[in-house]
Length: 314
Image (cartoon, rainbow, N blue to C red; front, side):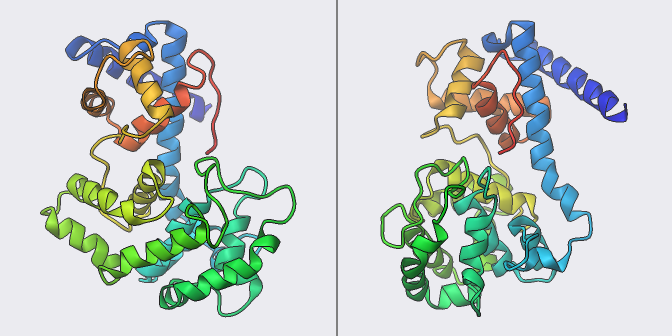
């Protein structure tokens, strides 16, 4: 009952904010129909909860077993939070990278992260200290173990990584991604220096620092628009970096840009420029009191079924 009351309050708040936005800024032709509007509001609420989930689990005790890749309850996000609290920022950021690179498979869950990070139970496992000291050795190990890691039918990457390969040698493979990620970080020293350098260069502005890191991360292989956005927003959610996305990074997107056009134009036609779409979405986020990650996620999920609510767990 309390959850239902909370949902109703949030539905009313977001509905009122959307109406005010339309009065003060631009129409939202994609949600003229009451059903479409309600579906979008429910997707907004789901997206807010997904963003808030990390802060909720961070506020609770986290078992040491969550850090152990040989444990059945291993969880890369909870492990990253434990490492962050212990002052081991490099290991925390490395786990966020692995979480982003592999994603969470709908059936095998974290298996790829777990088996690669845990070196299939061998010691020492592929910690940041070990992989950054020997990225070539990591590639050799991955090459020798690819077939075993990719065994079975319940395997693979998460939904945000459909074109990524486990391969040690392919351009879009895990070997290239890890080696280029190590190079990217080590050019700045370590993860703390990388993040601090971006913030210092941007006068402490969290939005400009996010953008600088986003642009510099183009050197990480297989990390396109969505992977960079996911990685950097997760650094922010876990408290590892005081950054926030300044806009939704629609350039190169598929679902979010479809959602933006449908919402702001009422069709998929190329009428508004990407820059204008971004400008209007920033204003929409401000009006709704949510950040750009929520707007991006909600639009992407809403455009899949604008008139039919579907709960997405990705």
